[in-house]
Amino acid sequence: TQLLEQSPQFLSIQEGENLTVYCNSSSVFSSLQWYRQEPGEGPVLLVTVVTGGEVKKLKRLTFQFGDARKDSSLHITAAQPGDTGLYLCAGARGANNLFFGTGTRLTVIP
Amino acid sequence: NAGVTQTPKFQVLKTGQSMTLQCAQDMNHEYMSWYRQDPGMGLRLIHYSVGAGITDQGEVPNGYNVSRSTTEDFPLRLLSAAPSQTSVYFCASSPPQGSYYGYTFGSGTRLTVV
Image 1 (cartoon, chains in turn brown, blue):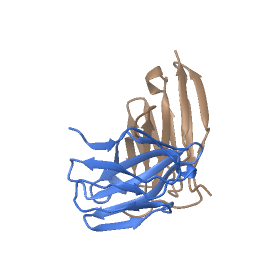
Image 2 (tube, one colour):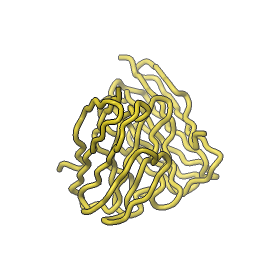
Image 3 (cartoon, chains in turn purple, yellow):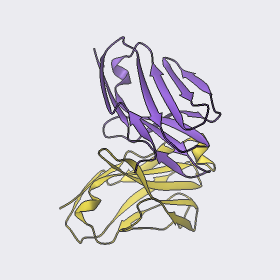
Image 4 (tube, chains in turn blue, yellow):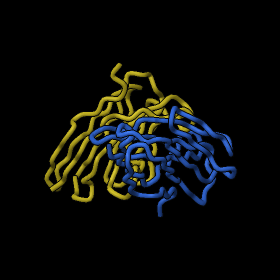
């Protein structure tokens, strides 16, 4: 049983469109991280959210941590081909226990 | 700035063979871990270490051994490879409280067991 479920699993959109990716769980996490992974490479950290209800912005990317600290969302505005990749959420339970979601594979078509 | 270095990049093993996946980091991070990534399964924790001389099991430890003799190195050993161990393996490191500050990952080792 996967602790963190991400949706959608696959997403293909045109350049300039907006999109939202969801990361859901029935468990409470002390923090939640988002990573992006490109083919042949390891995941790269985008952001960490710690407080319930917290919103962080990274240029065109907006991350939100649910009030109950069980879920998170990633919203991309005006997607660009450079946003293409596998987006992974990861929930922390304690200082060194990080559980990863199943991932959302995003393709942005020029 | 090398970060986390994994070797080899690719490896093909026959069932029953043994091998060691190497991982080294130059950031003086105390915490290091090994994950495997399989389609539709996300990243699953194999073993982790909170410092030299200290290791512990993660979610899927069976068939793998680790040791941590130095802060820099955290090798992963497969004693008798099985086809179920075909996967992409990632090593990660972080300072203490890595769950809050984020992990730095290596570029992975793609292992095929035939």
